Every structure is written in structure tokens, then in C-alpha cells.
Length: 159
Image (cartoon, rainbow, N blue to C red; front, side, top):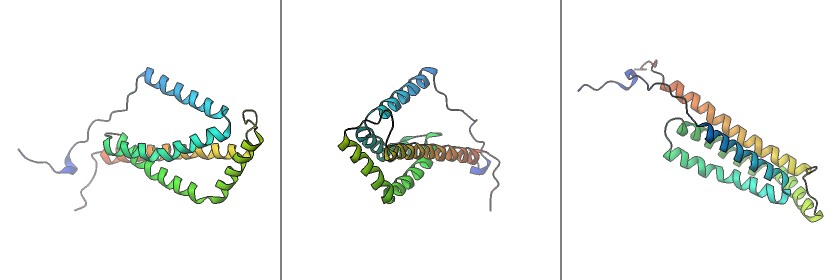
């Protein structure tokens, strides 16, 4: 049996990821309920939970890189790189962290609840969290597109 060169092999046919309607509905419901609960809890409860989720994201993405296949692996690699850089950036922003912490401590000491009007630090913190996850998602999608382009068979051997 004759071995063919890697650049002459035909790529696998394009397969879109498929999800059942029930799975998408359940995922949307979980995200909606979680967002509602996090936005209606006092900030001194919701913000530590949000930041704990941010700091746990690299562990989940690492598992996806190790055990994933197909589109999961390039998505997880792209999101992991962005996630790690984002966490490093958040940790280095001492002024932002001090502002958020002072705002949350002040709210906790006053006993106010932020359901009607969140404090500046809490609002900023939630915006930072949403932009963090959005950037990770976008980076993962770009890596999936790059991986798909590399899977095309129209490559020319450089040698």
C-alpha cells in the first residue's frame, strides 16, 4: 500500500457542529436564569462568584484542549490564550481592582442592595466580566476559522 504525502490528502468534508433544539433551549435557559440571579443578588455576593468563574475558565478550557476533538480543540486553544492574557491584564490593573473593592466594601457596610441602581464599581466589574468572556468567545471562533482554513486541501508544498 502506497503512502500519500500529507499535502495531497483530501480534507474531511465540512461538518457544522450540530446541537439539538432541546440542548440549545436548556443552555439558553440556564444562562438566562444565571444572569438574572447574578444581577439581582447583592454585589458583595454576585461579584465574587463572577470572578471565581473567570478564574476557573482556564481550567475548563485546558480540559477542552486535552480531550477535545474537531472544532472544540482549536476553539479552546484560542480562548485559552485570550483568557490567560485577560486574567493577567485584570490582575495588573490595581487601580481598577481598588476601585471595585472599595465600592463593594462601601455597599456591604451601608447594607444597600444594588437591584435598583448598581454602584459604579459593581457595574464596571460586571461590564469587565462580560467583555472578558466575549473576547474569549471571539478569539475561539477566530481560531476555529483559521483551523478550518488549514484543513482545506489547496495547500502547496514549500519544498
